[in-house]
Length: 504
Ligand code: SAH
Image (cartoon, rainbow, N blue to C red; front, side, top):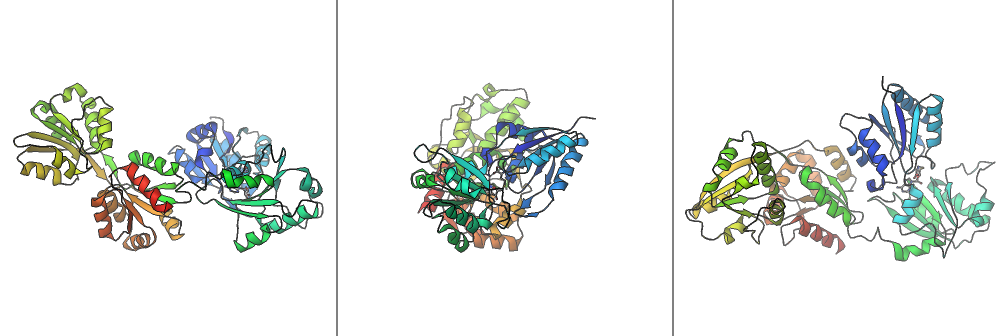
């Protein structure tokens, strides 16, 4: 049997981008992934489809799975020959009981490796605009557990030493004991006016920061009901936040946005939104699959020279046609003959990337746009390879003007299984800020994926953004409140319009 191994991996502080390259590599390859509540669940999307994914979450004090059971689980998986990615929030050896897990593995004769992670005590303050050291303010810092029982007689924390001996103090797990922590620091000589920052859910869309002093912070925390996971940062470096607060100032900071595009296209849109500070929830409502039969496309391609125009209406159309051309032993030179036109910049760009000159891209990025610029089409032969289920307006209008139009199916769109539960949970918690629709079919597919009651709840709580008037019309038909519609029907313009909406 294959020998098992456990990797204790720092999952970073929350922002999934703050995982190390080594950590990612291991998540992608391990047989099992064991994770807790501080590790961003998004990281699991990288795991192998057949990997065992085990949640051992613990929140504050109430452990879902006691530490001993976690240790036993890791040993059992490894003894069964599994490679195990044990994801731990932040860094595994910073207040994460990673040391204990490693000891247990050694005792059981299980091989292990540690992959350090970005600890929240560094990243949380950084994302709150606070560098934990700075030459003008401090040369020392300390990470301290705030979890200790405040009534403990023989405390392991030497308050008299840390209160004045260290510049920046970062307390983990300390919100419950905040009054005791502040009091002890003042009692041992730290000025009551020392600035204090509380950073909750740092580096995530839910990040919140409160600023006070040793004197005021306990009251602030009480009033604001500050709960874990929260870091307490004490020190003069906090005064830099006024100038260095880059993360919370991004236009879409704290906004959670649903992206309903097909998985293949969603990532570009998601990345743009995330660049501006949003957290995205990808919820594909459309997936493309090959047509039931290639006959129509194959025969049109075989007669390609007969056509005057070859019109592409989507990036998918281009992709499937090119794939089919390759599959049938042809290449793009076999597209010689017709002039090529494209609806939309993206479609045109995907053609140009293949070295195909696009003769016509209409100003308006929808079917009607082509009609206004294509000119005289009487007697012309036009080939339109596209989705099976698409609007009829383009072929119908071209035919009315006397063109001979062949519409062939290059792909079909189907409705995928979605992460409905996650979406509903966030909607119900009031933590979903917008749902985005980049086409009419994403609207109707989205609506079709929920029960009428669920849909009503989403519509009541979450406003929407639509890419253009046709999509808006469909969204409104379902009852969605459309608050954003860009002037230009592109993803770039929609991203900008969403950002402008939330900034105003
Ligand atoms: N190993 C982890 C710490 C685990 S102890 C690390 O290196 O970050 C758990 C404590 O970490 C929480 O109570 C909280 O104080 C802190 N913490 C972890 N993630 C956090 C986050 N995203 N924002 C604020 N505090 C966080």
